[in-house]
Image (spheres, rainbow, N blue to C red):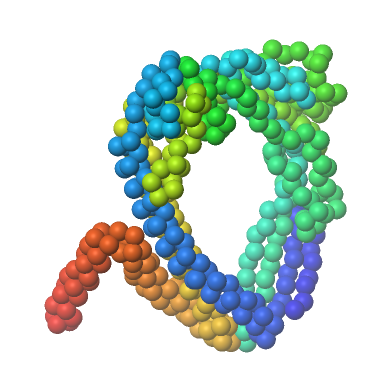
Length: 387
């Protein structure tokens, strides 16, 4: 392996030459990673189906158990039950950011967002195959300046000289009310943190009580020379709040507190929606969210399996790389084969999981899959006969 370096004004290029034998270590490591991904996809797909079944059962049970009540009065007879209520949130104190002395009145949550102007490293890699199995990898590191609300560790940059980021003296932070009421009930913190419809906080610009170097520039605080020409280490701070508003909650009545309810299959029921929404609508929304999450995780499991299978064929690609065009053919074929294996295998795992968790539905899925396979086979046979 050999490295060549080229330096530009705000870019850094690294060229790595690797022989055919020198690639064997990365090839074996890639195959091992592929095996881990392949196994992990089974675990993810099976777990996801069990999670989805548990969620459906818990939500169906909750729809039968929930009782709609008035938010104004706590009825002792409902102690421990799953209740639904709507009302205007009431807070008894203001939220204050002690570092910047910014106050939010009639707010449930206050968010401070701190951004610093920093260097960021972007990486672009191009690989060129050589006759005989070697390869040349050209990596270009480009350095740009941008606002970021997270510290960027310049110590990990490939080219650190002239691209150093200082430590952020202030961090973004969230302030939540300690006590909020919904009529006669008290919200717990888990319900408060579900509220995330933040609005820009209108702050009266007073420069006299700010940390040193800060000044108001419209709706944000700024520390630096000129907002239109920021320099590395300049800071800007914005504030947002969740104002008091009408919400709907499904939770357990525990004294006068709204708490998480332990439902069927040990699933937690603790829902918050904006505005006045009925219990049935809230549960249907929760089911819809669960369905979306289920399909996202199914897709994730499929692609993890697909990439795992592709990585596992790295040794074949390495053997074929003595001739670059042959390696390209092997790579294309491995993707096609991986797709043909991952697709039915993913469907099989999903069906098997449902067969275990919900036997009737699982059996129906398997029967439907077999029926589709038979139909496809019958459609293909006449086409082959004509050919």
